Length: 288
Image (cartoon, rainbow, N blue to C red; front, top):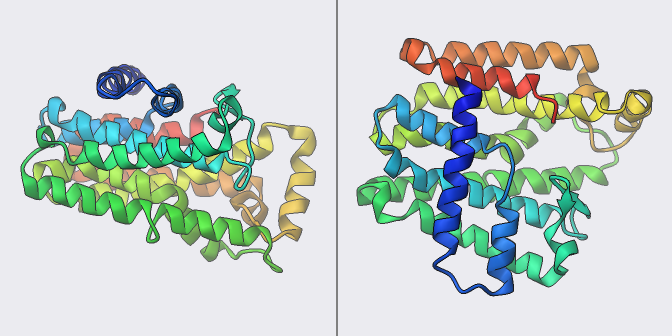
């Protein structure tokens, strides 16, 4: 069920981006926007659509914030890949935007995708004005200096820190860098329905942290020969990971416990939330 709905989400998001971008001039920055929004797991959009389904929200309304979060996620990746940030040449097996075009166009592409996210989440078809306002305000907080941007800034600072981050510090860092947008996505359906988002918020907090721990595990297990070197390097540098702090088996145990916590948070929804439970299990079972 989960994988079918995730695949359906990907198809729907691709179609919505095609529709939205078709209204813009086919200049290089718009071409790059289309390029940057292709592919990916679409997990954040899935969380929007699935939480909306859980609350009986029309999918025609939910598709707008679902596409918005993918636009915002794409902007963050375009900027993260820049030479002044992570300096990555590949993204999803293809040249990154700054490699395919140039640094300046990549900056503008990210800026345009950021703006597009707020245009989409504020679209009249999303719902009444108070719903759109709440979604836009909460997205601004989740993506800015209280959320994703703060987390990224803390991550960059850790690169040159004299001492490694503590477990509490890296947990707070990842709550912004990765968790904030996952939490926004999972709570979007409740906001669309003007319902209590608290159970979904607890679900997403646990799931988001499990997601990042799983990323750290994949970084190590992706190359067994480098695992020992990676652990030693992380222990000595300012940029710690959950694996360097907890050990590989400890990180796996922590991720599993968080998934169980996420699933338990959905108890008010009963069996209707089973697909969301499958999504939580997926984040620690994935191989990329």
